[in-house]
Image 1 (cartoon, rainbow, N blue to C red):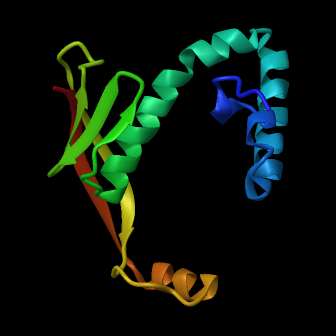
Image 2 (cartoon, rainbow, N blue to C red):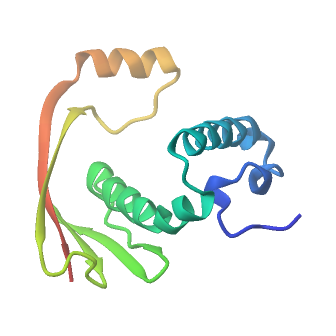
Length: 135
């Protein structure tokens, strides 16, 4: 099987992993439908994808509190305190404030989805605030 280089956009490239096959097929169908509506080509969407992926890594670092360095393409993303640093700087020196509503639950294993749902129902709400900047 040939990998097209845009695995995240391509059901064909994820077909070997049966657990994800139907998910990616649905994503591909939705993507193609929106492309038809927009009248834009897939290559144009694919050219912008690295920025979406970078934003995803920034969001994951901030929202999960993970201090593990994540890399994509030329960029490295790392959370330190409430600041997500991106190297090299894609923001032209700007510092971007970020905030998200969250639920606070104790770190533990849950025996079922219902157990997790119950914990979320009783969890306190909070707002996580921080910033994203190049470094």
